[in-house]
Image (cartoon, one colour):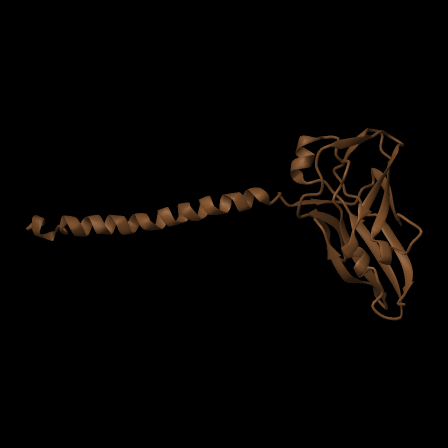
Length: 198
């Protein structure tokens, strides 16, 4: 009687195969997404720097709306030597003056401000790597940054506008882990101009 209740061997085998399909499909999905996860740097949130002073200017006498190249001057105000990538990758944000303050016009790049009312900076992509350059206490370093997308957004959309360009830089979690001299905070130099549409 007990033998008559057992499923036939073929039915039992097909049931086991069905049970194994789900874990194998999940394993395949994990294997396929591993390269994508490896390419994405860990998200890192930092406060604006108090260890450094940074300023932003157009890199030539031409208007930044035509050139798109900017100069960032970083000064080390701390008592220890800091390290920055020789070619940092900046994020950017263009705001336009409105009645109630500044309004976002456009932004881009691997480093962003979290939101308009939160000064914290978030790193969402690669922001520079080796070679690194040391910045001793009281020393300054100039970086030339080419951002044609920011320059395009920096062009007034109508009449006369007050525009503010902010560049953002902070180290990725990986870069900060590899080099303890990298600042634990972020740079946020600004440039404000009154622009007139030609």
